[in-house]
Amino acid sequence: MNNAISKLLLKLSLSALVFTGVGAVAKPASAATEWFNCAPSNVTEFSGRLVVSCSNRPNSNNNISALAFSTTNAEQAKRYLSMANTALVTGKYFRVHIEMGTPSNPPSWCPVGYCRVPSAFGVQNQ
Image (cartoon, rainbow, N blue to C red; front, side, top):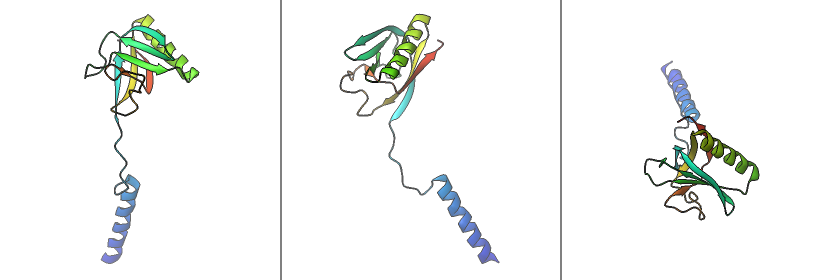
């Protein structure tokens, strides 16, 4: 009887490990992502990208003062421009989600010292 219970408990334990992912192949660590609130001071189009300049420093390292977005995807660029302009005109935050510390952010056309490209964006009350 104890042997049957032991086998059942072992099967249940292994099932739980597989279900929860314990013992599975480790996934590579992803880049840190953060949400930032940018108080926009201007919105411009420059060389195929939309740039939002922030009057504040929206991240804890105080090294981002501009957010850039490529105009390659016209539909996404329209949404970015709409949200950025809404924040600018209404005095709200342009809220952005940024992957930090990845080789592609900032991209080569976005200066490392002050610019990042958001992966998500919106408008938030100040």
